[in-house]
Length: 117
Length: 112
Image (tube, rainbow over the protein chains, first blue to last red):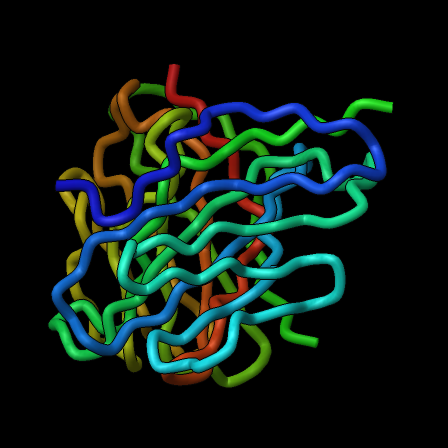
């Protein structure tokens, strides 16, 4: 089974509007972390935001926030006030702390976001 | 700021060649990773290393090997390159638990 599922291969949003990128995950590990990365067309991976499984509050980082719904195993990224520079591929990733693969990240297939002027 | 440097942004090699992809980080990180990225598949872990001379297989190690002789350098080796290894390769490092991975700019490798 897929550990990280991103069901939206592509998304479009109008400049200045908010957009939600979906991410669901599958783990039996009680301790895990969820990450979102941005990859512009130039190729570098840029870390955006992190949510720990025991964090009581949803993570926020500037215009980025994470809508963490633990019972539904979802960790959607919300980008407010979209900018043209937000056009990129976005990846959701998970680290399972107690499992044998605790050091590595498992990535979803990504969502290509295009911001329209 | 952490700097993860991959030796080449673009590389073209021929089938059967031995190919070396180099990655260097400047922050004394213990853990380093090699991923390949293919459209629709996201990033898949090839190998990682948690210390000098220590390595572990990731999800897709077949056809690859790695070398970590010094803490700052992690090399990915394609022993005999094949066309199905044409891909984007990304190196990453991490200082410790719970920290985000820092990535290099990637190497777009084409095997002809």
